[in-house]
Image (cartoon, rainbow, N blue to C red; front, side, top):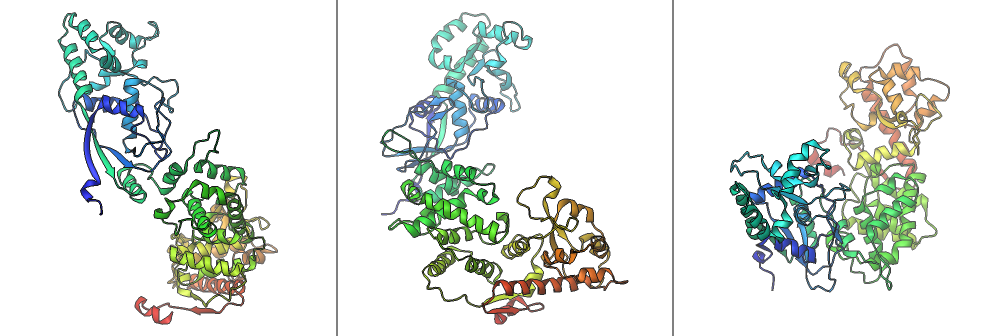
Length: 592
């Protein structure tokens, strides 16, 4: 019988002291996907001011589940007791900051971001409660030891507060909890004690009766937990499935078993290899690569897809089974992009699913066919249709690559490309086709126009001004001032080349034919070829006049040059070139 939706969310409440005792006993746990707290003195004081005034704090969100996750073993310097044999676990999804602040305020401890600082909180009982909305007395009412300690009379600003502390007019919150009667007896004997007693009873009342609001989540799946966490943490980094899998697959090292920590596994992989930018693909990318390799290489793995529903089911031993060969396969994917296609950054890869399809191809493959892989990459990157944008297509691609490994692959289908889409691929867009075009430019190892023997897409940059920039051959401001009869968008990627930053800055908004003329040296034609440009730029620069639609002519010529290059790259494949310029979008399907 399905669970009643109203049973999934249950509000509850508990006193501060009871909550902290449960937290210390490990009844409430903080999973490791919770980030390190941002602990500020002022925020802690405002938290206690709200409690002091019996204002609501907002609910602490608790996820109740039978799933065992890796937890923080230490919270605010306090070792948390954890019983691994529980039948149900209670994880704090929202409220870590408040929970840690309350714990350390009363029981002390340590804060990682503030080494040497004592987070124990004191209250100055002499500060009256003004019962005003803008009352700022909390900043004087709640104090930390560094605001009390006068360093044996050498810190003048604290001498008055240290005197109050010695007179027991400033006391620890913990002392009020543990020794209320003793403090009450002492204060009751003092003259003018009414404000002190009022404050003392108020804090006593707070500790005993202020109830922290809880919302218990029950019967919630991992994928829903990720969505809930993201929606309640709009200001912070959202929780993703990788965080959950890290916590869920964590295994403590013992005398009888080896430990496992996925985050450390990925981190070490990034650090012990070379300095490739591809190593910094997202944790989620790595997780999905592992999921695909598990699905394809472990029988009855239970991992049927790369959606959160199935990523949640990945087991530590499954990752361990494939990891050694997975590392080699992933590095071969990165090597293929960098050293075969000469693409130096993940930002130019048209489909992130390429990481997964290629990893399955390279996995335990001693004889990869790189010519085939180049066909595969350019075919899918430039094809008029998005051929690798969902998980259904992902499975189809893996079948194709597997058939190539088994020598049963027949041929690629027709390759369709639309000139109009090349024209409209924009400098300001980072869509699939835009990335494909930029990766094509990178593939040709473009040379700098000023230093023609220098590659723009260098592996290592020794001077910041050598950083590759995207440069408009016909600068935007120049076109705005000299529009002529051009009607094509100067932001088209057909008007873009890679140049070093310093060369790009030196060119600025100059007349393209003037600055091209200044770079003309023997061998410059070859430099233009490395940018998929013809020597017509040089020819035009020598004319006494400039055609009024020169940008349009330039873009059309660049399109033809790119199509010629793709024909060479896809030799042997049926290529069909169309042009939907001027065709209504509703009519384009008849052309395709």
